[in-house]
Image (cartoon, rainbow, N blue to C red; front, side, top):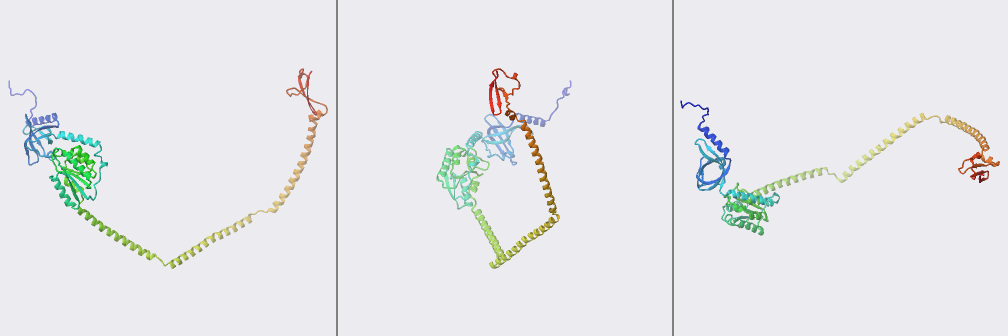
Length: 442
């Protein structure tokens, strides 16, 4: 059998393809996670990348942190530093070395401190210490500025230098306190309470220089936050550098990126105010001159339009006469026109007026004929009525009764015409010519 012949169809891959496949497998199997260890063999390359070894008592792993991530780190690690890195497990293909690609780095223990920071921040926010509506505006012209910091701190020199340069006329009052170490938070809160109680300044600066989260932890204590929130005057927090945030920053009325920035926010430069005032003076003078020129021009216009009182009265008299003449003509013209129209209408009425004499004679004849006809008809009607009355009188039952007759009715008022209508002992009514009577039938 020839052992050089390949009887299987499995593909042959290169070392580069193998390392790439292993690298993808590692990245899929181990997502980003925090790893703790000690820094060893730290090197910062000219490109800005960091190379080091992360080790503990039993093992070590190579690590790289590229410049794009390293520039956001708030410290440069040194040999032997205990750190925590957030990294992705990967493989460096050209050498086939297993390593970790670091995305973020922090000092060991910072994770627990950050969790404590977050818990306190959420608690104080729920209590209302950070609400925007309780933030106060800074005074525009402070007479005195208070500073809460350590007398030995470089931040104090920076603040004093900035205030001396910008506003040398403003009084500065120092409330000394330790800004780091044991019980520093209580002392910082006490210094803020002292400044509030004395009420000697218009604005208060709480500051210190940059440092690690452990160095700045005194400004993350609850006592400091309540002291800042309850302070009588507005508070500017200038703790650390631009990337550093503390609980004091959130509780203060205004946060400054640095102590120097806090001093710049507290006091506007005197030169700026003087320059602004000078510019305002120039603008005011120009406005006053412009207003005076306009007033003078308006006065000249009124003076040219102003007339002598006598001439003005005479002018008004001419206007009055003109109005009177116009009024007279205005009244006379409608009357004349109405008179002419009335004459025309009267002429037309006279032309169309009928002859009333003939109509009156005809009316009199008709009235006479109507009266004669009515009298004749009344006479005929009266004669006919008399004849009817005589006939009616002949039929009057009363006349019959007067001749001795009577009208017999039963109890029901019915006229009795036959003896069969009567019952024995029944009552009958007799109507006579001069009254009535009752009788019983036998």
